[in-house]
Image (cartoon, rainbow, N blue to C red; front, side, top):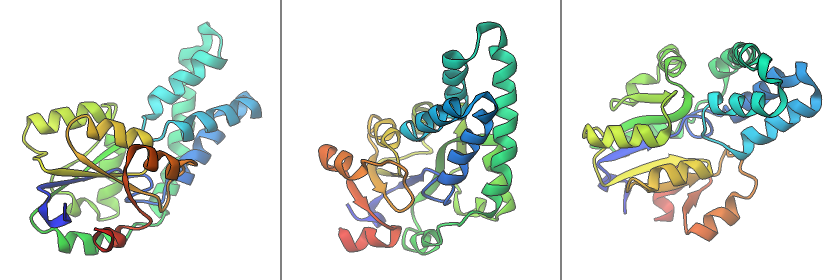
Length: 218
């Protein structure tokens, strides 16, 4: 299906709109480092293996795996604060995918929205500060709601109309969107999924190295 045929186009944020995957990966490592490098590396690995899932679930996994029960709540809050501090500057300065500007011109009739694993409140402020919110008239959505919750709700609200496309860079992006009837495109440009090519081949997923390659590949 051509891009111009879609009524809705939804985008993941990290690794699609912004080159921010490495910013967040480093922030997870830094947040967990006070508990030892082994723990920090474990959280970093868990994060990259579970791309698209919120920080809240990842830190819950960390404290349940490495922290004594009586200290988990305190450590959880400390991890969140450390992480939020570490990513704030990085998100404000990381590269924006300027291919989106051309893509917007080519899809004037599509409703654009963001469906991210990032914190929704932070995303709203970030996109406003970087003057990106105007691109996504359908809204900017994130955690604590899961992507499944967002897709289900926005379809029910008729904010996501089919045929719809979700552009993401993780395995979870694929599973969370296709279960609700959206087409999926894997953007490999900034993805941290090591075996993305094998995954796309196994699931017959359309993939491109950059957004400008979409129409050339159709």
